[in-house]
Image (tube, rainbow, N blue to C red; front, side, top):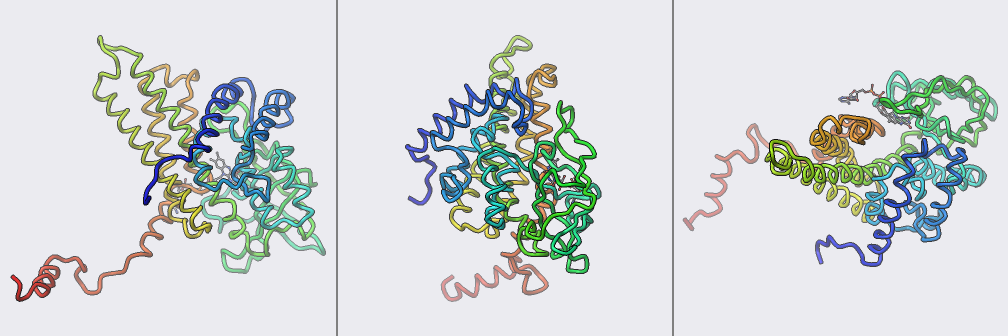
Length: 423
Ligand SMILES: Cc1cc2nc3c(=O)[nH]c(=O)nc-3n(C[C@H](O)[C@H](O)[C@H](O)COP(=O)(O)OP(=O)(O)OC[C@H]3O[C@@H](n4cnc5c(N)ncnc54)[C@H](O)[C@@H]3O)c2cc1C
């Protein structure tokens, strides 16, 4: 069969279980707990750990990983179907052992860590005994890593790191940070930096403050200072000057996993939009009878379905090629679509809920903030649009002459020549 939109029936059974489990056991957690990364909160032990054990027993733990790392090796297509369910509940990724940024950091450690580092950081990370942080962005710029100035200088067998990092999510809960720092300032821009694993307790690390999103009750995005932070040479991950290549190990997967989860958030907003449209009356009729509300429903459904299909196709292409560079365009494309789809659907859902929609009693404002989060984290939309366009243009050539190749007079002349003698 050339095209198949069916889910494998055996896997569908798993998905059905996940859907119920997330709805009944996981969704309520976000109403009583704080951050999912605050794993040392005693309530986490009581409420989250038993659920994680259940997930492990059902062999659904860390499904993003291959079996060599304790995952199921499902591949990205199945993961997409799972993640779109998990995306609807704030605690679901941590309950299923596939939460960012730990997933990406685990991938870096799996690829580049020494056996000791794998034992010390990777194993407990995969078991969610610890959580981690990725510190790349700097206060003076994030979209253009060429402006980063955090410096690592070699001193005997150590590297000494100094500088500032910005918006390092979950730094306050992390056991270690993966830090990008300039090691070769004279090298070409993309070979100036190296990646390090840095234990959070190392002397010289200070959280200047934790920055919150909008009115987030507990701010978790760390503004960090590194003052002469000393790490041994083996803490460099990958080769010297190769930080960009190392970062790509995490960013490709990370972006597409965010997109999979965003389907779940957008679907939640869509379901609320539909329920409200069928429940609220104005001027003597249901909102669902108003054509402009119907338009909101149709536009939202179309956006959601189109987005879902392109995410699933991207997942399928990752499985097919097993090479993120070959699917760069697809990943950047879903990265570009993701914030807009969530933003538009959450906004329409907010609108049909009126004053209730804009209030703190509904999730729409949070979803709209999340849409902006998705538009910025792992690179802003504009940068990914540039990537998509550049990748597309690789398949095109400039016109051979002054006029376009498809200039109608030339096409007519060529057609006449082709059929000469016949017409
Ligand atoms: C919720 C959240 C969590 C994050 N978590 C992390 C984390 O854990 N670790 C980490 O290192 N970073 C993290 N970031 C930072 C994120 O990677 C940066 O915000 C992002 O790379 C943009 O950098 P910036 O904020 O400095 O914006 P700037 O680089 O100042 O860019 C500002 C704006 O300029 C525009 N722009 C930028 N480049 C171009 C271009 N080429 N063409 C046209 N317009 C352009 C875009 O509108 C962009 O939003 C997080 C960000 C958010 C919002």
